[in-house]
Amino acid sequence: MQVLKFGGSSVANATRISRVLDIVEQKAREDRVIVICSAISGCTDQLIAMGQVEGERRESLLAPLKQQHYDIVTRLFTGVERNAVKAELDILFEELLTVPGDECQTYGELISTRIIARKLACEGLSTLWIDSRSVVIKDNEARTYSKIASAVGSHREVRVFVAPGFIAGDGYGHVTNLGRGGSDYSAAIFANCLNASEVTIWKDVDGLLNADPKRFPQTVKIPHISYPEAIELAFYGATVIHPKTMKPLQNKNIALHVRSFIHPENEPTVIDGRPDSGPSVPSYIVKDRQTLVSFSPRDYSFMNEHNLKTIFAACDSLRIHANMIQTSALMLSLCIDSDENRLSALIDCLREQFSIKYNEGLQLFTVRHRAGEQPSEIETEFMKGKKVIVKQGSRSTLQFVLKTV
Ligand code: ASP
Ligand code: MG
Image 1 (cartoon, rainbow, N blue to C red):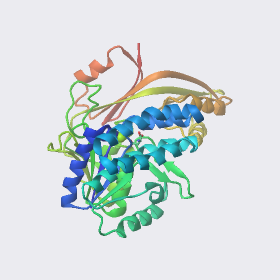
Image 2 (cartoon, helix red, strand yellow):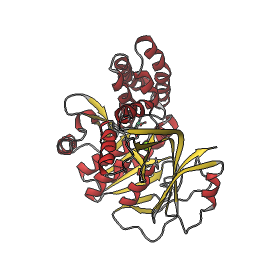
Image 3 (cartoon, rainbow, N blue to C red):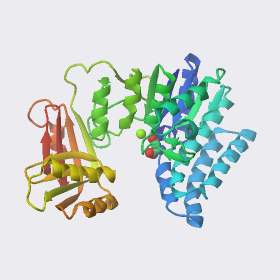
Image 4 (cartoon, rainbow, N blue to C red):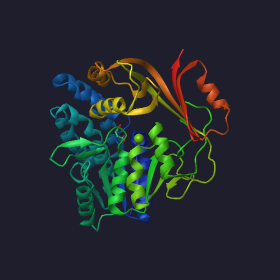
């Protein structure tokens, strides 16, 4: 069994979906497959916006999204099939007008996977759509395992299973999700539960690159990396793979391939249990929208363990994650994702004991495996016009909190 995961850009329009279908059909000739799919690109953002309003305002935000999906259906299907798929989607569009706001964002994957499952069935493949809301139970591995195993195990005749990524159940009958970009994680969960032979994440780039090609002029593909190295890169903000994806795969030693759906003939990046071979190329990772918050005890005591505990307990309870941490005798600085509400809650919580300062609109720039002491040309170029607010380093990783001047 193989798991194929397609992201939002691979299902963005009918032409791309046709490519996806070709890949699935070809793989299904060799093996049974599970297809995990994201919502079409941009859809989840639009659904989140819809969830913030109600009634007519929600209806008017739905209109363009509806049209976008209808256009895909019109291109992919004809005759009675077309009407049947439209009718199926209409039920979901109708639900979207009345569901609680936070559930809206779970519909993108429901819609995209219905279209894909229907089309595969039309092509004559024995296909079954699986409802991830009832089989992926968030934070409950044991229940997820038995539910996925029985949903798939009871259908020996099926060649292709199609399941929405990102969405899950909370175990109490409510719908939830695995966090933004979580479809990769869904694929890993399915693979783990079914002891898949491998997982392929199909992207619009050629594999895992050493930097984001939208930001850096020259990038190179990393042919192979270990699970821990992939976790490091994802953790610092490489958005190619969701950071939680590796653990379920590593636990079962399942290889992850990252490859291009535009050029499937090209070699993928392979992420697996083999150790990293020698010094690899440097990787450059940028995280935008960062805030640096600094805490100093008001009583001029040292930044000791007690103070650290108080600050981190507040972060933990507000679910604030520190992307970079630096301490000195009298100060702790945390680089966090910008979020006004969470930041003001954190300040309210700690202002009595600490004097707190913050600096917004920053970038966190991580260089992993820099070759030598001197900054590379790429690094120098990127830092032009930027001021270093914090710098921190180890043998393998250098981090800079930057402000554009
Ligand atoms: N559609 C979800 C998102 O945009 C999940 C995913 O694409 O992986 O975050
Ligand atoms: Mg993604």
